[in-house]
Image (cartoon, rainbow, N blue to C red; front, side, top):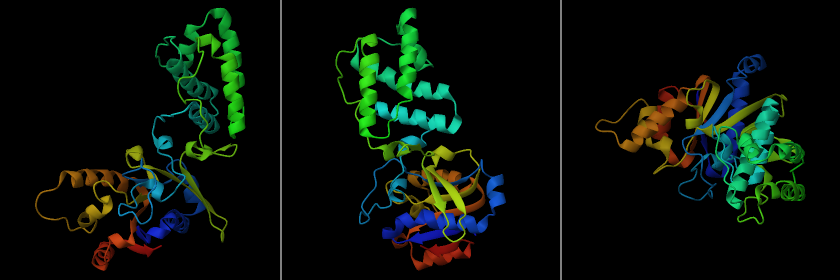
Amino acid sequence: AHTVFLFDKEKAASVLPAYAKLILICFTDLEKQENAVAGCHAVGMVHNKEPLEKNDPHFPSSIADYWCQYSPSLTERTPKPQYLIDYFRVGNLAFAQTKDTSKFIEWISKGLLRYVNINSHVPLSASSSSFSSLLAHLPMNIQINFRSSLMEIIFLPISTEAEWNAVVTKIHENIDALFDITYVKNDILKWTIPSSSGYIGNEPVSNNCYHHRDNETDREIDIHLGSIHSVKGHTHLATLVMETFWYGHNVKSIFPWLCNAPPKGGLKDRNMMRLKCHYVALTRAKGLICIALPRDLIDEAIVTKLEKVGWNIVKV
């Protein structure tokens, strides 16, 4: 059932639902349960670009062109938040997934350490623990008050701009004086749109996880999205490789190899990189491999060649 999904650019958002339906056809609930750790994934060589318009010649350029909720920072093995609220959101997400309070506290401490270093002349040394770095600056008799203030702050709600403004007020009241902050020099405390950082309303969601429920059978599947680099060394139950753009459309550039007809002669450096990257992507799955391609990038001759070597062609 290894499948190439061909889609009109206007229907790029339909690729993930089509892939999810195929997974549910191919695997029983018991098989899904037995492979819960491996999971089902959708990956692309390029994942850190803003979505493009459908009529852009580079479309689809990155994963966000298939799923607008995709956030590159959440896929990185070590997220790199830009604003303080994003540190809170990543901390909330880590706590929701692991129930480990120490990780929650450390993420908020990372954000506060950055906030202090940007807005104060107080030098805070870097260490493996941002929380310890903050504590080390404070006298022993103040440390208990700091711990209490921090615990109060990190569990405040942050799902709306008003709630985040209340958190900022608490930070000014309880943190600024301890680290000699008299005014804020940049916009690290600004409010950002929740969906860009892994939150919908009050509920944390899995890192770039698309959830699909089949209306007819009421069966469900989660699909984890990320860069090809992020899944190197992993094993999946199913993998979808999505076309992306890097000096040309990546999968299109390696069609001859997918059709088992590599060209004679030398190999361009970019195609060597594409081949290595997509080799990683296409060897993750032990059950199902899929590829998503815009229909206007592929002609009937290529379709015939793909079918000849065993690919199942599905038009979305």
